[in-house]
Image (cartoon, rainbow, N blue to C red; front, side, top):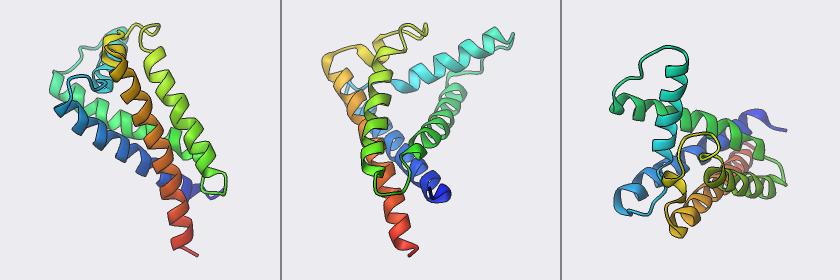
Length: 146
């Protein structure tokens, strides 16, 4: 497995996911609000550690950085080989399903990702897009460096 290409592809997919998600949530009231879930998760962890969470702007910034880093590492498992498309698609679909099924049981609330059927569909679609974009980017980097 080509590690650097896989990591670069993963981070490309994560950046594409985050840019499209942040743009979509500004224009569509049904868009998933994964940023809110990230903010809640950070605040919850800080409170459990006895720290006071920062203001919402800072929490949002931290959530965005956390999203790109965690999604980038996750999507890098798509790899850069011939099966990258399949792995990227599966990883994206699983991330999307997790985005709509895990927040409630984790105590982060259901509304940000399950508000409407459109919200759920967009969440799955966005994460699927991230996985496919990661595979595409990794494969493109491999081809460009040959």
